[in-house]
Length: 415
Image (cartoon, rainbow, N blue to C red; front, side, top):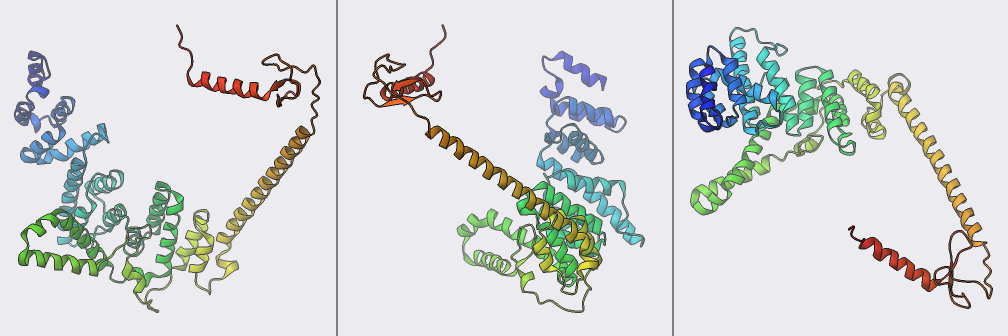
């Protein structure tokens, strides 16, 4: 390490900047014995991150994650989206191996967390440079639901993400925390209905659980179809013939089969057409009432009441929700009434002042002089300054105002 550092003194520029490949090649000899110091050399030597990552991926893949972690810790915005995606992919590969090993032993539990899985969940939530669609395709269909929920959230599929928290993980607290993050991250005018989406999931579990995996699979396939359209649109026209016709038929079939919304609710078009089936899953009324009582100030009261079953008791069940909501509405009404009264009073005061000003009498005599040109007012049109005493010819007043405007637009240069 000292030799690599000392070589830089022989050049006018650091060796890492002059011969980065030479530094990488010889650093592999000491990387295993001194991993932290070697990576510190990469970071302090300003070697291109993509070059270091590619070299580590080929010669020391076990050190790749450490390098990317340190890069991200030093400068969160200095690491490119490709490197962020690379780091998350490394975490996911290790988690998938860990999951497969536990499944083979019959010891897998959804609430089990290895150190790498904790890193994966943290990275998925905190960074945004990775490709959620590509990661979603790698997840197993019957495990790692928390990772799946975060990825669906990144794709604005909020209903699917909330359904995972509620029906797969059975942790309503995570669903509520998810709603809070969405509500606080975007304007409230468009994010307020995220709580109504969670309310609908609690009130209609049958609809949200029906064909759940099929909807996620369709979502991923629709993303792949859109990518295929962009990348191969021009080539399809050029090739023509049977292959172009087949691709067009596949794309058309995918467009007819899937039409998913990316709004706050994350609801697909097919959901609205699904008939509601009675007797499937019971309404999660306790979770509904808990949500209403804890986030009453973020939920549109009238819309929430329309969603509730008719048999919901007002006094026993809805009092924690309606009580503070009505108090807040009453307080807002009182505040608006006070503001309205103050504005009316101010308006009357201004009108009174205007009336007083209009009652002012100005007497013009034969000796009245213009304060600007020092000539008599006579029978000319005149103007009176706000003090009620200073008289000027209207023409003189207009000329003086024009002169002031000219001076303001072209100030004199200081010598």
